[in-house]
Length: 333
Image (cartoon, rainbow, N blue to C red; front, side, top):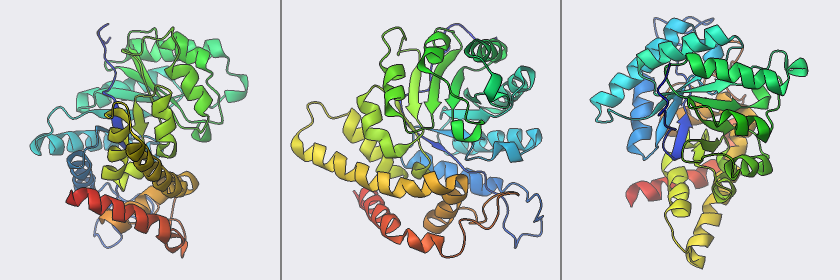
């Protein structure tokens, strides 16, 4: 359905935003399925845009898409798009996630997301039958989705939430040739796989942008050709992650002083990102609430609950304090 001229999202730092729900003090609160807090969602989105974040991923793994109805998904995209437009970010990149295993439902979600204001779709690999899914089956599945989608599609490889299904570089090489498949996100720590895709001479990298899903490997990922990161820590400390990205990508002939600064920032980001790796969306939501005062540290909808657990946030005080110091310095500069 999409034009053969489908383009990838711009290179840079994206945030997979958490979905905010109303607090327990709200009269609308329901402990089983708390309603969306769209005002908090919009406020956080505007904060990220003003902090230099390139774009947002809505309704990904961090966004608890699997816990939302289709009506709620559409409402979130529409509200965020309207808030960004009203705030002066009319063409701000929005990527909508999908996490279903059927082609028809995935296409429906993508087209509903497009109508609501998303510009791209981040499509999680179908992992329900991972043990018996062939490479040929994955390729045919993604092509079917891409051909039905009204927005360009990105391949989302996150073994941790898709039954540990593996997508080798050969799948990316084949699918990158499809005119409506324009990029990918790798949410695993294998930098060699990043390199084998981002440096593959048979892929037209002007039409296919690969992003790492882990800011803790941003510097090496950029060195092997990735276009940026879709990074959870940037939901909390956006200026710091953006500054690291800019230092690496905008410095020609990096001198020793700049390299030392890059290494220092990458160290801080990598240490703090361990919270995200350990706790995922629960950790991101709690950190956003503590550091930025958006939303509640509630852990999300059931079966997620109670945040990271009693005393856990305090155990990360050294890493978070240091990140907050860097973030404040960048805000003041």
